Image (cartoon, rainbow, N blue to C red):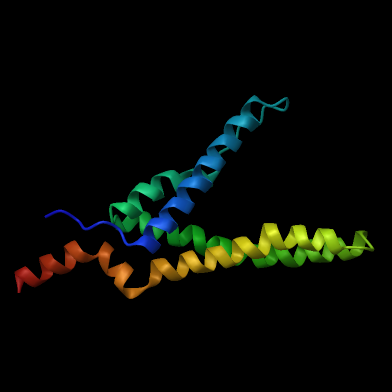
Length: 140
């Protein structure tokens, strides 16, 4: 049985993971070939695999996507508080820096919250468990 095409919201979430995964991969390569020669692994690269996993309704990749989103939902507010504290301590006129903080922390937080909401909607979640539910119904 062929799986239906992913709903638009799920495709958007998957594409965001792909774009950030590619960005992480490019960053890893750039850091490796930079003057410092830093070799490190960026877990954001997993977004490339999450993209395919979400579009193919793989439960494990949805779970990994949710874990990444939980980590972001936890760390972004902390980063926001720390950055505001640092800005007010160092810079008397923080207008432009508040804008930068907004762009780099608040907007990603809102996007992450939306992505989490999409992945936890009951009808989206049911797409990832459709095989096990249909198998359970046929066994009864």
